[in-house]
Length: 112
Image (cartoon, rainbow, N blue to C red):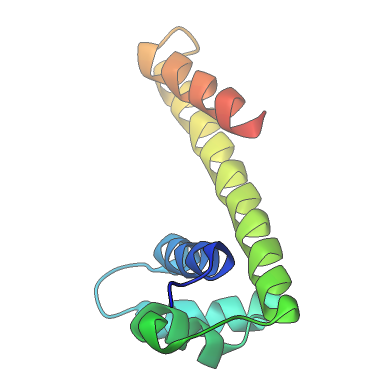
């Protein structure tokens, strides 16, 4: 029986969340623990979605919605970090820098 689209989405959100929180090689567990602490997504759920997705038949609505909310909040947090880095770069390079213009355009595109 094929996996549901909901489960595939949850697996992708879990991977993306972990990637956004990981600081480097060997930091995956710390990243998953921080996601649990900050967003309430169970570490065990994150671990299974990352390492044993084929063994999961379905995902509960509560876990799915928490994961979705965590993913959206983390994307918003990452956008805030990007905007902060743009401001720092703009102060160092000047507002007329091509890199600053490209980064601002990207932030506008992502931010809606």
